[in-house]
Image (cartoon, rainbow, N blue to C red; front, side):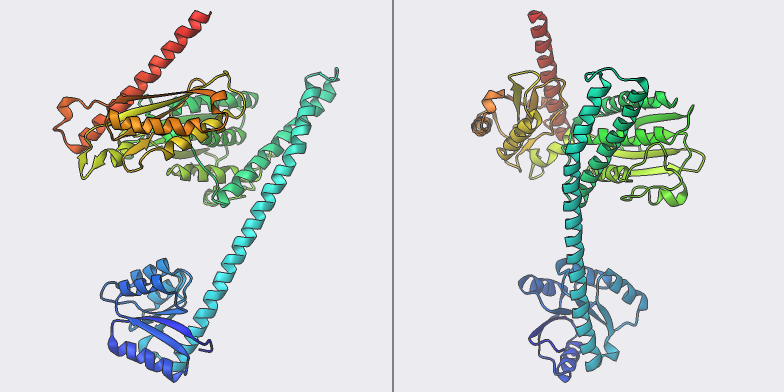
Length: 530
């Protein structure tokens, strides 16, 4: 090789083959330093200490054989070029290795000094080109995302202004208008709303590609979100004379999901179903459990529309994809809605798919994880395969001083939640996902593996940290309570899994009882004030 001071890591367990490679390198008069190891584990250890210019790799080692060998090297050193040295003339394996990221595949029996030198030089050059291309693509993607984000934000201001003034005119605040003028303004308002939706989708898509989309899972009653979606879109369905129905399983459990994001998915799917369903057709939204998959709730949106071609079904969740045969001339988008839905569902560890045939309608389905208190608690209440001796449920209530709260209340309670999460021991305590709230008060629950005395240290720490938040006392009152979790005596000798379920059941009952008690007090307070 022409490069001076090249470091080669040779992973070869056969001393004869190792000597042959060294001889070929000497014959090529390459200025190289060869570090030879005879096991994959030793090679990985060497990679962690020093990054070589190239790896020469035998696939059959004492501690690894076949394709797994180069996969493990690629995993630990993705940017280092690899040349495989094999005694087998296996074309299938060679192609598979190159497609996986290996730069070349050489047969030991045909190894000459010129052949080896050329393969090593080309491997280094190709790896450098691949790395340069990856960096260029990343820079291009970052620039594109920054540009789209900037343009989207800049467009929002004039669009908001247009929306406000058109609304003022339609409301008659600037004076009476002729019916024809009102119709024209309604068309303008519809176009402005479409642009707003496109900008929102662009911003969401850039967040997805930049890995910045976040979800805030809660303990959510899915039925309420389905009913809210249908209520929001029923006027659209009625205007188009499309039936809109709900089918909810009575056994439907709570789900562990971000309600705002799930609502976004439901609105997108139901709106699309209405849009592509002809008059007198129907759209049905269902949510149910499937016995074969008890850890997830299945949600589906079915329509009696035109259906989707097999080719389109394979692409419909891709970014910017639009089926040319399914475009509604009355409303067009950017083809980002289903792409965003897919990413939202993926962040929930669920999956989304479509079943459809041309002329037979379509059914879009997705899954959300069931809220399992036992599954959440198990990692922190079990130690050395035994249940910890005691538990306490800590409750933190943030009640705004003015109802409805002023300012960005969501930002305020999210900041407080982050503080509470920093005040616990991750291996012994758990901050439960926030519950859905019916009022303005935001409540956080912490299950701590401690007795009442030691839990007091945590509650004091939480209080001190919250008291340091600027202006928090002017926005809300803070109440922190701690109650021991009493495990039923009959569960003391039960199997570990049953004990965990029992603790989870006790915690759930305490939370439900506390919520009901607070709601009753609020109702009595309202009656007294009246």
